[in-house]
Amino acid sequence: MKLEAIRGKRILIIGDILIDTYYVGDVKRISPEAPVPVVRVNNTYSVLGGAANVARNLMGIECNPTVLGLIGNDENGKLVNKMFEDLKAENVLFPTLESTVTKIRILGNNQQIARLDFEKEFHSISRDEELLLTQAMEKLIPEIDVVVVSDYGKGVCNELICKNAIELSSRYNKPIIIDPKGFDWHKYENATIVTPNLKELSDIYGEEVENRDNPIHIAGRFILNKYNIHSLLITRSEKGMSFIDRQTSVHISTEAKEVFDVSGAGDTVVAVLAAALAAKFSLHDAINLSNKAAGIVVGKIGTSPILYDELETGILKRQNNKKVISADDVQEIVKKLKGMHSKIVFTNGCFDILHQGHVSCLQEAKKLGDILIVGVNSDDSVKRLKGPSRPINDEASRSIILSALECVDYVTVFADDTPLELIKTICPDVLVKGGDYAIEDIVGREFAKEIVIIPFLEGFSTTSIIDKLY
Image (tube, rainbow, N blue to C red; front, side):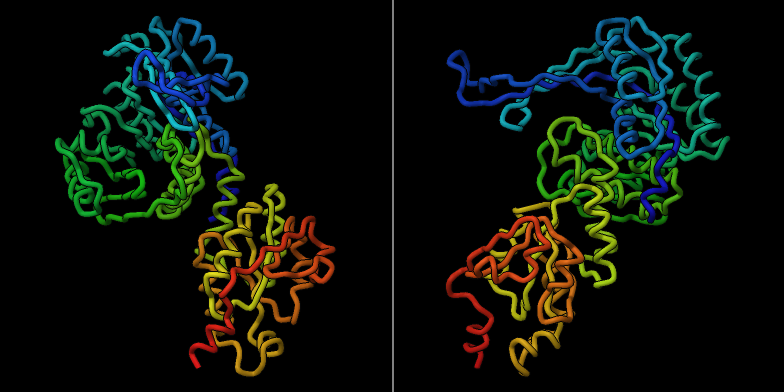
């Protein structure tokens, strides 16, 4: 999977365009008027939402999206036009007499406290608007790589528009991804992939679906058959995703480490999935890439798009689960990481029997930067340093155990008695040593921007563990 293949791919997004406005501040007290938090607002901003947020994500990963939809005849409609101009995103927006749907989110201490929606309860578009949208699709779909229908239930994605989009996509052999809404999925018949979240899956299934693999599999197969859809990609919050088609059910664990805000995460999944399919990635790779992107954006505040560099960093760190890298790979990986302005931390050791002292030191080291690279003495190097009875565990075993730690991003083995050449290759931003070293005694200090010494935890050492065993 070569991520650069997604660059420049052309994706058409058909759907509802919204404005997302944020009031962001601090909460330090409860109101004396009612038991509600008082938010002292420090910042207010607006971003494109709905189908336009899919475009924001696609532009973030360096694709070429085109948005097709309607634009309200009001101040927020003018704001939409300006934001598209600022974003330099291609768009075909037809004017409508309806007001622009606006969602206001109030955030205090990095948590969403309330949301205010400004919209009509029932939405419909006119026959003239249907004709304009259909004629635009007929012109645009032959020229693009993938079609996305971003249905927010605000009127644009009615039965006629959805069926026309699916029929035209099929005619020109273009994959079509539907981000669904509502209880009428007959309009999505013959779509390539439909991407509900668990609540949307439950709504269309007719009863609450437990967030477990088997109930989701059963509900998914039922929906595929009832609505003649080729496949489903179901987002399951902290449980990750499930992909279901006629032959398979695949369940993928979440990539998220900490969830701050799920706003817009579904748009990110759809955007990255579309880009990956446009680049002819396998379905397996496309879904895994989407899952990785979702794990990144839920760690942000607000409706924040994914960025190409973030996605590339995520792939570098986890590609094929290869955290254990050879000495030959170090230079290329470090070059890419520095090109993305990642702050690199390096430490080293024998790590013969991993214990609490090691783990504590590595966790503290990771806090000093973005990427932690650990150098491990080879077996021959350990023998020269510690004696013929060591190491207890061979270099492969020690590397694999270290790579299992979440705080460790890369592990590489060095054959010399010191890591001098490795440090010279990496030129880390931070060089970490555990113990009570004097800085002038630290090998490779001249190739690092900063030296940090982390004291060992008292009472933990490999030697004392071995002594207890014998």
